[in-house]
Structure formats: C-alpha cells, structure tokens
Amino acid sequence: MTKPVCTLEGILEALVSEDIVEQEKASMVTSLVSAQARKSLHPLEIIAGRQWNHKSNPQQPLSLDMLTDWLAEKSGLSRYHFDPLKMDVASCTSITSYAYASRFGILPVKVTASEVVIAVTDPYRLEWMDELDRIVNKPITTVLANPRELKNYLIEFYSVSKAMEGAGNKALGELPGNIQNLEQLIELGKTGKVDAEDQHIVSIVDWLMQYAFSQRASDIHIEPRREQGNVRFRIDGVMHQVYEIPANITAAVVSRIKIMGRLDVAEKRKPQDGHIKTLSPDGAEIELRLSSMPTAFGEKLVLRIFDPEVLVKNFAALGLEKKNPLSGTI
Image (cartoon, rainbow, N blue to C red; front, side, top):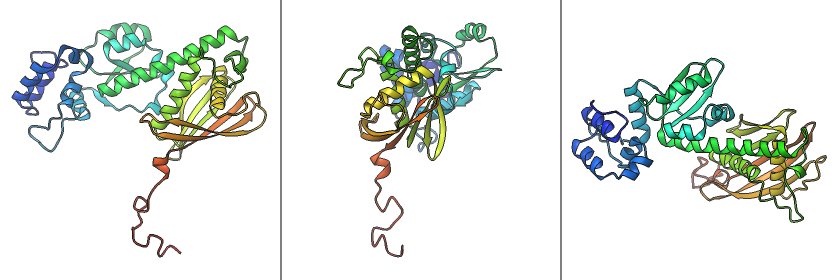
C-alpha cells in the first residue's frame, strides 16, 4: 500500500486489494464523503455506514466490528473488547487528559504495576507513545478497539471522572476533615430539592443509574467504608465491583438518592424504604425500589431495578405452549 492505512483512501485500497470491496464502490465513497464526515468519523465508521456486504462472501455484512477485526489482524494488534465492569475508571483516566486522549483516539484501559494497556483506533499513529512513555515510566501495550465504542467510553469515563473530581474539590473546600454531612455539601430547602450548584453529585448519580440500566443490572449497592465507598451491580445474579468513591462523596450520593426516593435525609439511624421512577437511556420508564440501612461508616443503599421489559413475560417467552399453558403442571 502506498497510502497510510488509516486514511479512508488507504483502508479502501487495502479492502479492494483483498477482494473485500469492489473498486467502483470504493471510488464512489472517496468522491462523495464530505470533509466534515472525514473529520468527525473514523474511516471504518464511514465504510460500515455504507452497509455493504463482503465482495467474496455476500452473506457477510461489512459491519464495524468485522472491519475492526480485519484492521486488528492487518496491523498485528490484539483486538480489544470493552468490559467496563473490569476497568478501573479512576486509574485509566489518570494517565492522560481527555483532550489528549480525544486528539489521538486513544483510551487507557488497564493500569498495573508492570504495564499500561492503551486502546487505539489508529494502529499506525504512534506519536503519542513517546510522551506517555515518559509519564507512566512503564511498558505500554497497544490494542485495537472499535472506534465508535472507544469514542463513547472516552466521553463517558472522563465525564464521570470529572464529576468525581469536581465533587471532591468542592467537598475539600467546604468540609473540615472527613465530615459525612450532606448539609455541608448540598443545601436543602423545604421542598427537598438539591441546590442547582451541586451538579457534580447529580451527574454522578445519573451516570450510576444509566450505567446500571445499560448493563441490565438488577440491583445497585452503594456501601460506605472508612476511606472509600463501594458501588456494586448485581448482573445475572453475580455481584460486580463498579466504582470506588471517596467517603464524603459517597455520603452526598446516598443523600441525593434518598431525596429522589422521598426519604428523610436527616434520619440516618433507622432503615427506610422508598421508590424512584426514572427513564432508561432509550426513554422507557423504570421503577427502582430503595432501601437504606445504617452501618458503622454511614448509610448503605440498595436499589432494586424493576424493568417492565425484563419482568413481564408471556407464556411463549417462558417456553410454554399457548394452548393449555398450565396443563400438566399440577
């Protein structure tokens, strides 16, 4: 190939040479795609958006995942599949700034004592590596990720990280020591609404709920500890550690959720129950049952998610015949 593989022309040239795309289609795309699309979309996203099928195997669509697998094999990098439940968001977002990561299309996905693993969308653009190598002072391993997924997780992870940092900075500025009083983080009026200035806490709670919905979790557990609060999701019956939150921010998050559930924020010594109605990312209404329990380090919250799409099933969905569905069960 005579052109960089991660330009639109370079990728199309490679796909044509490997008998995956017809030359006529490749020529048409290069002439029709606007400069704005080239700037905002990865070349693989542009090609996948054409909804072509494999030239030599017409039954196989050229999806974004298929094209990402192809580029990973061509570049010799391992293909990376995002699993947010296994990622330490705080550690990953501490490696580099959002602006720098967005500029080069990279996202740290694993940080250990011996290496840093960074997902990339362009396996041949490595000018960022020397600078990060000096910062992390440990071996860097690159893996290739779906460009659309990387872009989405880049925004999501750095948004929640910024919210945590903002809430932490506000707490440090207002609280002496490790006071776990919402009154010094959030000003509550008689209406029970949160001060509009405290958008960091609102953002954290919203992210936790939307993330739980997207992962199809059945429970959200927020558990206070001496130094860090734990956030865990129950998914398919298994508990997963999702995030660690500083203790004072955990208290503010708990109180914010209690307000949403119309519980008594001032009462921290007795268990309470409530419910919250909110919307999922696709706009569906979801109800959450809320229980608070006092512990040695603050209040623990358990939110049970009731998703109508998951809970309401007909007989056919349960594997029963429409005719006499209950016959033979007694």
